[in-house]
Amino acid sequence: MSEHRTLKSIHLAGTAWFILCIIYILVLALRQAGVHWWIIFSLSGHSILIIFLLISLYVFAILRGVSGAQAIEPEHPLTRTNYYKGFYVTAPFLGGLAGCVGMIGEDRIVQFAAGIALGTFGTTFLVWVILDPVTGLLEMLLPPVSRKHRTERIAQAKVKREKKQKDRERLLTEVLAKEESERRRWQQVLRPQAEKLAGLLTAEGADFEQAEREAVDIGLKAWQMGGLNCMQQLRDMAIAISRERDQNKEIVDYIPFWWDGIGNWRVTSLDKMILATR
Image 1: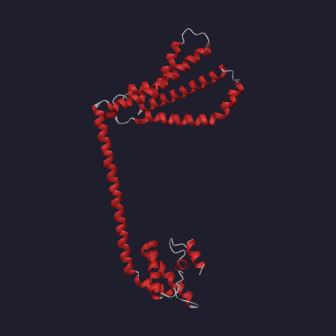
Image 2: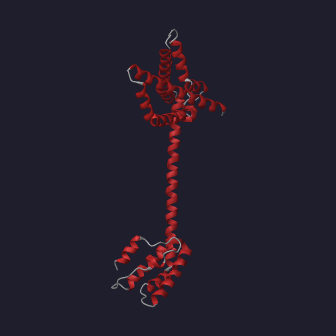
Image 3: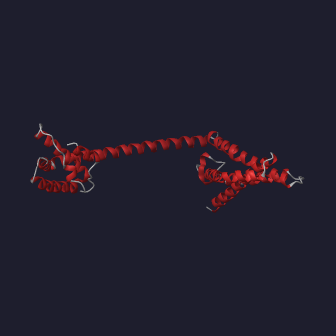
C-alpha cells in the first residue's frame, strides 16, 4: 500500500511539473511572437477555469493508470511491475533531466529553462501517449498466456452477464406469477365487496352520504388486504359489475373520490376531468 501511495504522489508531482512546463513553453512562444505581457495575463485570467477543469480531468484519467487500469497481471506482465510503474511516473522528471543535460553550456536562463521544458514535454508525451499504450497492446497480443487469459476472462464475463440476465428474467417471471396468483385470489375474495361497492355507485340523495361511508370502509379493508393493487382491482371489478347490471345507464365513478387519502390512493387529474364532464 505504501508503494502504491508513493507512486501516486510521484505521478501527481510529475503531472504538475509536466503542466508547468507546457505553460512555460506557451508563454515563451507568445513572448517570442511579440505578444505583450498584459495580453498574456488577460488570456490566462479568462482561461484559468477551463485550464483547471482540463487539468483535473487529465490528472483523474492518468491516475487511473497508476491505480489499477492494468490490474490484470497475467495480461500485463511488464506494465504491472514496479520497475515499469516507476519509469512511467518519473517520465516528466527524466525528461527534464535529459533536457538539462542537453542544455549544458547554454548561458541564457530563458533558453536553458526552455530546453528543460521541451525535454519534459517530449519525454512525457512519448512515454504516456505513445509508449505505454503500445506496450499494453503488445502485452495482450503477443504472449500466448496473455491472449489465453484475456480470452478466458472475456468468456467468463459473458457467462456472468448471461447468468445475470437469466436471473433477472427468472425473478421477473416469479414476480409476475405471484401477482397473477394474488389477482386470482383477490378475484374470489373481493367479489362480495365488489358487488356491494357497485350497488353504492347508484345511491342518490340522502343515501349518498351513507354510501360514501360504506365505500370508505370497503376501500380501507382492501388497502389492508393488499395495498394499492388490491384497491385498484376492487374498483375495476365494481365498475365492471355496475356496467353488467345497468347496461343502458351511464355509470358515474365516485370511487376515486371516496377513497382519496386511504393509503397511497390519490385522485388523479384524469378522474377529476372525467367527473367534471358528467
